[in-house]
Image (cartoon, helix red, strand yellow):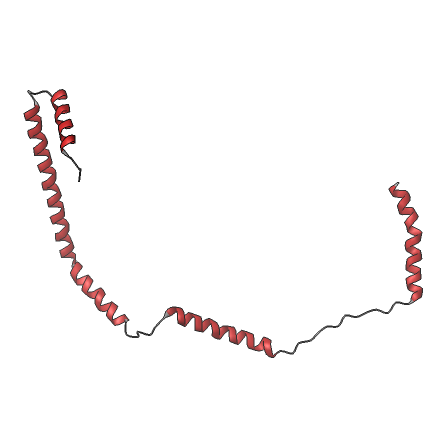
Length: 139
């Protein structure tokens, strides 16, 4: 868990000697060892209880059931959901495109109104008569 090499242990020992003192150091080390041992025992107990609970829950039975279901689901090895979806989409597209391709296409021809020369001349005169008024308004 923690990586202690010789240099780190020497630094920790010197710091302990300075802060705790040589008189109380054996007692503190004994208490630290007891605390570490207690933590290890608690961790082992927790792990044992966890494993027991998992065995009670029948994890192995659940794994076996899941494997059986997986094997039974592999009945049709050629089943590919993406391929099935693609083929269904292609069928729908063919059904939609078929009426569009067979429908007759009607091209609308634009209607051109016949305008006589007199109407064009009248429009030009009318525009010309308004032009000086527009110029006067802009100036």
